[in-house]
Each structure stands twice: as C-alpha cells, then as structure tokens.
Image 1 (cartoon, chains in turn yellow, red):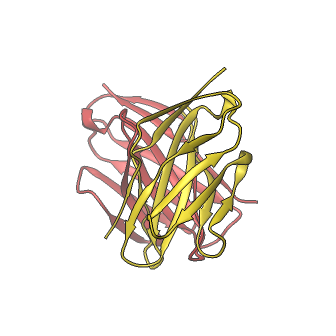
Image 2 (cartoon, chains in turn cyan, blue):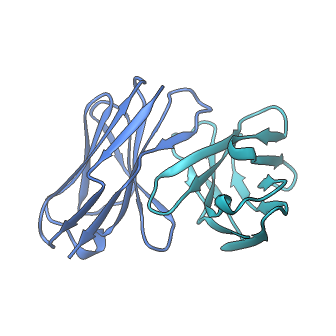
Length: 113
Length: 113
C-alpha cells in the first residue's frame, strides 16, 4: 500500500521569501517521489522527481526537494518565491514496482507581492 | 520531443447523452496511459490506466469506459452521462522506464447539465 499526505491546504508566503510545501509518504517498497504544479484550468506539469541518489533534487523553475528517508518526507522548496509561483502543488508517490502513483490532495501556494 | 493532446478543451453535455474524449501522445512509443478526473475540490481520481494496446485497467466502477485502439491513443467514453460526471478530465502518459514521471495533457472541462 502507498499513501501521501500534504498537511497544508494552503501556504502563504511573501515574494522574495523562501517557501516550503510539505509532503510525507508511506510506501512498502522503494519510494519514487514526484512533485507537480497545476495552474488554473491547466493540466499538471512535472517539476522534479526522486528515484535514487542524492537526497536533494533540483527541478524546473528553481524548485528543489529534499528526500528524508527517516522522516518519510519529500518537501518542496524554493529559496526566493515569485508571484508567478502561485499555483496548486501536488506531491505523488509510487512504489517502484507499481504502475500507479498516489497523489496528495494538493497544496495551494499563494505568493503575495 | 514528446507532446500530449486532448480534445475537446471544454464540453457541455445534457444528462443521458454519450461522451467521447480523446487523448493522443506523440514522440514516444508504448507509453503507459492514464485517465484522471479532478473534481472542484482539487483531488485527482484515477479512472483508468493502460500499459498497452487493448489493455485497460479500471480503478473505479462507474458508467465510464476507456479504450486504447492504437499505441498512442486513449479514449474515454460513456453511453449515458450523469450529473456527477462533471469535472476536469486529464489524460497523462508515462514512459516505460521505471523512474519516469507522468506528463499531463491540457485537460477537458466537462459540464453535464
């Protein structure tokens, strides 16, 4: 079984400040972890993934995520937020042997000017 | 490069009418294909996935069906729409390699009246 939790429905941050969007997961095998972003009335866009290797993963648009095995977390981060980062963010996990990822409920990121 | 197309972008249909949504992928072969529905509350619900031509797995029993007549074509259908079928329908593909993330189409906004 696999599951993912995004504990915050909404995150508010001021432009220029660092941002963190939290994600924790549960999976029986090796976790494959993903972050996606969705702008209004658009499909999800792939941001980054962790499969193996370095715990800090860098992705698109300056985003990065840190895999923490002991805390079963995969938080999304960005050093300096932009107003244009405002969107809905989804974390997803997939057991390495599965075709089907499990998505979190999404976190709405609002970056204030 | 790979691209994914969905059409139509928006659709308004009366209750009891049929439905056909189409998704095609270019630039890859033998992709894993997925249909999701996203309700107003934001969460993604997996409806169907396919690992090959003619191979369809249903995740949720309902009045929808899916078909994969060609390697890079995935069709979502219904014989009679219900009000509860309204939502944002997303098609996605994933490469056959184990660590690949999913790539989503632009979505179809379906309103059943």
